[in-house]
Length: 392
Image (tube, rainbow, N blue to C red; front, top):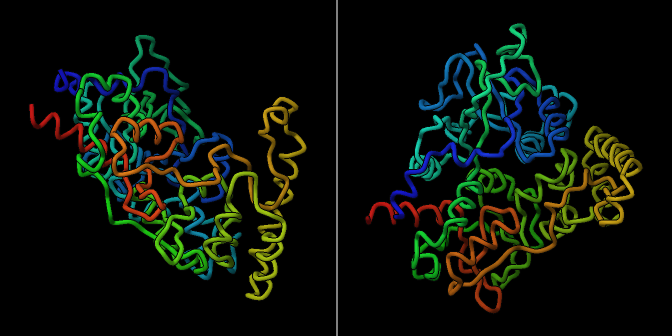
């Protein structure tokens, strides 16, 4: 039964998903930021129609238009922090072609046909894919105006080669499996320790260390769909610097990364926005480093946040969802105050529920005293289901 379930068409996972909006590969970093803000999503898809396909995975081509990658706020933040010229002139950095952010992202996005199996989708993920682009099948064919069809400069377009697409994430696949978890009994009740899916190759930083020292690890955590543990001298988990939390910020958080300690950065990007004393500390240190352009970017972000705050609806305020008015960037419910943890004796299904409930692709594994054992990722979980198919 498990094998036949994994043979389901991947198009089944697209039911109810909205058509994928896009930006052209010729767009700028600033264009990508604007698209992210409009969509409210963690990533925006980048498409190429007629340009050289140097970013494509060999299995990604569909006609003359292809999704060549994705860009999120964490990519932007790492780009802003990555080179001194970007820190000295963030305005110039924002005018950079978004294609510059796709380097090293080969294979993170893969195209699949609707009749591809769920098992094929899992294999793509285990090979490193984050998102699977799948044509949306519809009995009603809507043809956009010919002039707009495949137009590379068409921001937000949902049509490519006359078709619309959705994209599936690792989370979508794990959620689909959880909805029919009984098919795989008794494996889901086994502990993560017994299933040998605890990854001990974790990234850590001491609470007092400069946050900038893990800039490369932030990029790696994004690629590996993990997080960075903030620990004390006894290797006990105090919190994390998570790409999911950073994705809820704006580009000005780059200033905090280059000026604060890991512990202070946790507080800066946490739910509700940064304490005012940390905002002032970042500004003071930017002045010390003579990074006046980055300071101006922070001030512009502050004005933008205040504007968003003033337009917040009464309903949002009643629900406690009002945007912060501090200079931290925008509000997002994805921000949280603590790392999500489980234990080696936690069951596979319990860990799946935890990760899905908190909208993350990993769960930290700790002992009772919070000393780190490792991390469980969606990729590790999917490997279990892939092995089940191989055993039957």
